Each structure stands twice: as C-alpha cells, then as structure tokens.
Length: 122
Image 1 (cartoon, rainbow, N blue to C red):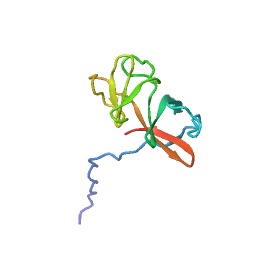
Image 2 (cartoon, helix red, strand yellow):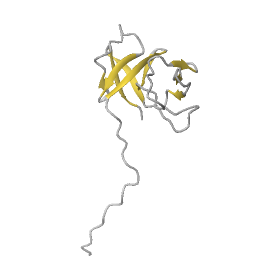
Image 3 (cartoon, rainbow, N blue to C red):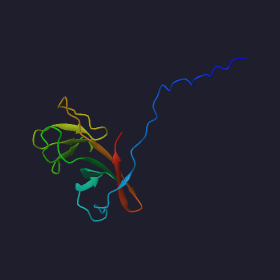
Image 4 (spheres, one colour):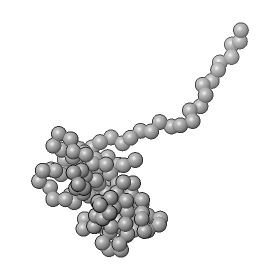
C-alpha cells in the first residue's frame, strides 16, 4: 500500500454565475412612460417596452455617450438605433450592426408580481 495522496483533477470549466435580479423600484410598469429611466446597482439604464416584454440598455450610446432616450427601435423591435449617428445595436446581446468596435450594455428585464426586475444580460 502506498501513502500517496491523489490530487483531484483540475476543473476545466469555471462555474457560470448569473447576475442576481434587482428590483427596479423607481419604475412602476403600470404607469411609467417608456423608455423609462431606472437604476441597476450603480448603473442608470433605460427600460424599453418591447411587444409584451421589456429590455434594458445603458443610458448612453457607447460611441459618444449621447442619450438613448429618444433612440429608435427597429427590426421588429430587435435592434436600437442611436438618433445622433445612426449606430445600430442588437437588443439581444448589445453587439453592433454598423459600428465596429462598440458594444451596448443590455439588461434582461422581467415583470414579476406587478414589479419590474432587471439584471445585466449574459
């Protein structure tokens, strides 16, 4: 018999931890005008009503930080276009459509028990 200790094999994949949902207590979904300004942690975001759901984005365009409050939804509400320079981003993942090198921060937003909750999208 040997007294050697067998070391466990290293884990090849790290555990994926999804961000926690946070209550958007500054937005009442029944009375708010959308897009609505909200706060997720330290970040101020805009919440858009899309069909029967919601989606959040960072408040300013990543190009020059111009407000996205009056941005246009397009592509059957799957993309957002900044009105200042016509840069377009996918709402699903924030990837740019026509402005290489820029990415928009996007947020999952859900309605639960009459309140909106949000988290940074993966």
